[in-house]
Length: 278
Ligand code: C2E
Ligand code: MG
Ligand code: MG
Ligand code: MG
Image 1 (cartoon, rainbow, N blue to C red):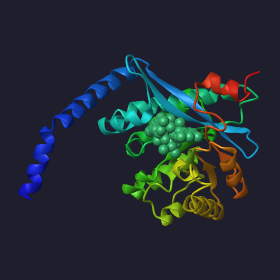
Image 2: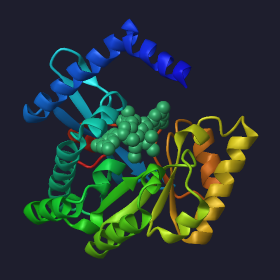
Image 3: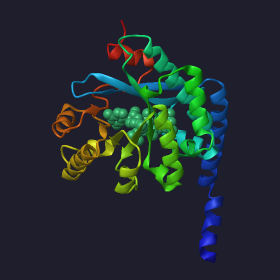
Image 4: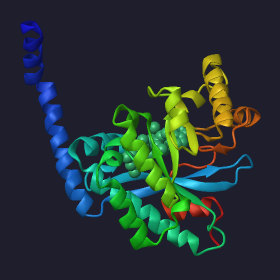
């Protein structure tokens, strides 16, 4: 035991570790400021049907750092979760997406489109989450039926009854639910049955080598079969080639997302690319 403690002490004074800790706290302070300074952006990536027609989009956050440039979400979302900044950040994302839905509602070409946002476990578990959603839906006037929350299996490490209750309340309000990165977490299949989900998203790590790795192909086929029998929609993530698209279609997948159809882009560029502008 003393040995273990000794090792921890040594790690704590490791200069590399110190530098990383310092870097983190600088970034956290920057993010706190950045939130107030309007440095966040939403990019939108199309989700398409088997004919390549747009069904909606996933909103993906970016941070325009004044000196570092565009910071990808994986570089600051974990930090935001640990520091609690995920709450104001998540609220901002939700408000932006709802405002976009209202704009889309005004035009015939975009009226039918959905927007999915990522909601992190820490954000969803927060006691104020439902009130925050109600507040944003109320002030923006967005149609909750066009809104989908992407959750990950990590949510299930916590009080599942509480999570089920919250999902039920939001669902009653019209919000849909998607299980993101499906297959990468540790959820048991029994949760799939209990959670009021509309959709599974097959993680891009299974799609990537679909055509060359028989194990990935088997996982994808099994997931599609499972989802079908549970009455869940499936979105394949990370579709980059026609070959992957064909395989997925042949095995019953109906919704697709990936660079083949469009990268995440600022709203105007995405609309232009998808032919949504008049
Ligand atoms: P995710 O929700 O699984 O989002 C999909 C990620 O895959 C996005 O990365 C997207 O740019 C990328 N992607 C899409 N198509 C392709 C493809 O064909 N090939 C490859 N290689 N990648 C593709 P991004 O935007 O860097 O986001 C990473 C993660 O950060 C997201 O994974 C999500 O977990 C998280 N995230 C993004 N925005 C938010 C947010 O507003 N709130 C929260 N809580 N998390 C967010
Ligand atoms: Mg997602
Ligand atoms: Mg995903
Ligand atoms: Mg992911």
